[in-house]
Length: 580
Ligand SMILES: [Zn+2]
Ligand SMILES: [Zn+2]
Image (tube, rainbow, N blue to C red; front, top):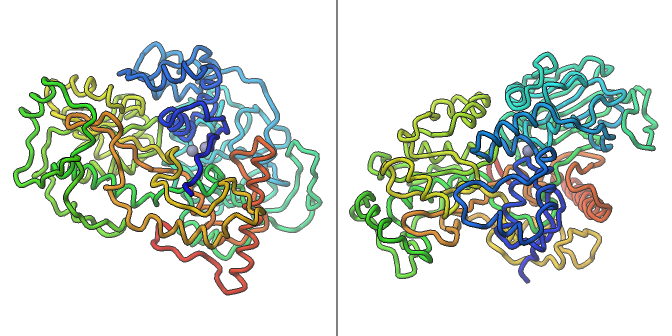
């Protein structure tokens, strides 16, 4: 049986059954890019027809923000809009949003410690002396603004730069910490914090906390019996992360036992299966190279009109000796799959033999997805163009590789970064027409994370319900799930990336399963490889049914880990340094 589609957004739990596939993908990916509140509010305001109109109509400009701007994440509006008025509104919103102080949920307060994580929407929280920020996505910094006075904010150096740039929070409150070092945090009775690269967006980190329980700051009726005792506790807060064997091998994590793991459970359901990120980056680069070498033709559902054809004839310097396509427009070359670690044979092609008048536009909402941009730019030996606002943001990431690639001259770069809304079959021709014939055709790359159709390749699974109910005797064992999914992506190449409807020889778009959150399999490998007592979910925990589903998986992982440890298997063997 094919895997069932999941009718809920994995981030905000919105029922997506009224959305068609593109609208659902659009929703989920905006949520994943940090627009949690913005998307949820927008979707509630639009009935299904309006969703169709605003999300799917071939409009060259990004969809307009819904009317109640006060509730929209200002940063998302800022990043997705080219309209200066909207930008001014968004900036004003970002700086002066009056928020009602609410109580933070219990999972944002470390048990027994005066420390809050990603909890800035509640002004000053009683008994909290240290506020941690895991990364600069809006659903985590929330209502942080220049008016923040709640207390010191600890984060990575890059996140400090980004969040100051984005929210204007005063530097006097920012306490940037170096990575991979245990820092003693003032006012916490000696708790130490070690920041580790989260493998999410630039600056993102997971954090190991170690210390005694001294205060009950969480707004719940539960009181820990350990408060005031001399026992030392170890917690791992995962913020948003893409779990990797590197995390397991980190000296602050290996051979540690964690009392609590606060886990990013965005994709905690076997339905959410997608390839390891390094394979996707390679595939994406190879896709662009194959396209430029004329080795593949996209779906030709919509033929270009005559003026487009003239442009193609005049401008597209197709390489002589390029392989033919078959009558269905499928690629007829037979390239070896790239392994994710070995260099692709494509890299042996000298970039100067590729046409230099094909534009590649990569879509993104905010920070993140830079790895794809860099891989394509390096393969084409090209600069990267981004508009002023986006470039100012990117330069705060302190990525010297990216800095060296960035240019403010769109004519000088074959790779452009645009808002995701601008990377459509309808919008891209308008976009390249701005550049006076500099580009003869355009390839749009949409890094869209998990795809709604049920796990990319829509493979087979024994999963009877996809509900993740580990107590259901019909559910497959964790062992079986792992076996199925780990081998599933072994042969993943650019040939598995399909162009979107309406793509043609002049403009083609590709949705790429590039995720900055862990797949279900990666979460499972992570949990089976780390010694822990308890997991607390930080995503999807609003509804009791969802909490129960997740708890069932946590219990199943613990059971499986115990069995494996008895056999001497303390961690899941990884296929590479970077992925399981
Ligand atoms: Zn994030
Ligand atoms: Zn998040």
